[in-house]
Image (cartoon, rainbow, N blue to C red; front, side, top):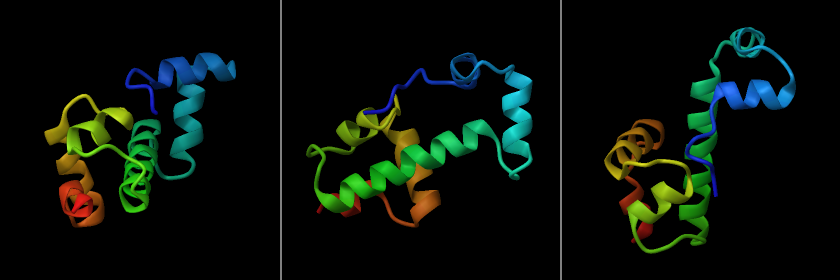
Length: 90
C-alpha cells in the first residue's frame, strides 16, 4: 500500500537533502519527483489489476495505491495505459 501523503518534503528529509537538491536530481533525468511518484503508483496499480491481487472495486485499487479520488485515478490510469482500471477488473 502506498502512503497518500508521501511527498517530496518527506522524501528529501528522509534522504538528508534539500527539496531543491531532490528536484535537481529528478530534473537531470528529465522528470520531476511528482511525475515519478505518480508513474510508480500507476505502474503498481496496473500490475495489481493484472495479477488479481486487489479488491473488487476501482475505488479500492485507487486507495491502495495512494489516490484519494477514484475519478482522478481513473483519468490518470487511462491517460497512461489507454484503458480504464475497471476494464482490467472484468
